Length: 169
Image 1: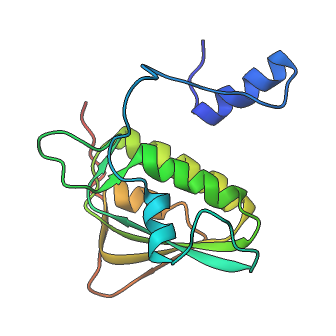
Image 2 (image 1 turned 30 degrees about the vertical axis):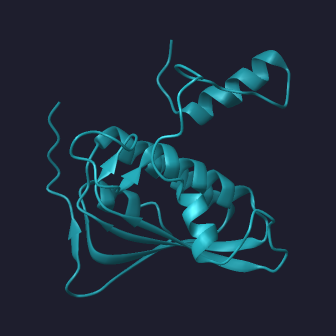
């Protein structure tokens, strides 16, 4: 009977159940994996395998393309998905060897809901470690919203940064 983020619901469930672990499952559990896992891409690019490194380091996380809840659809061409990026942000938050995160945004925006969910996860990450935002060609609309979660934002003079501030739904 309240509105909040999934993380708020999990915290409340832990309190009510007097437990430390929860497991959430939504929709059909028989669905196949959709789209690319950003964490997997970052590991491959970084030359890392599944094993975590013990060397302290800074993670650079690319966020490029339009923003959506999940990948797929007739007009889909990759982009930023809330489901994959949120999973990656939670992994980065929990990895004590990662001392800071640089989020590289190049996005025209997209889904308002997906942008808000990603922003929330970025704020949760930012509570635990420094979050620096680097803007590529643009951080517009939802991309701009995501950027606002950072401790600092760096952009080139030619970067398009901002939002028209209009939402209809």
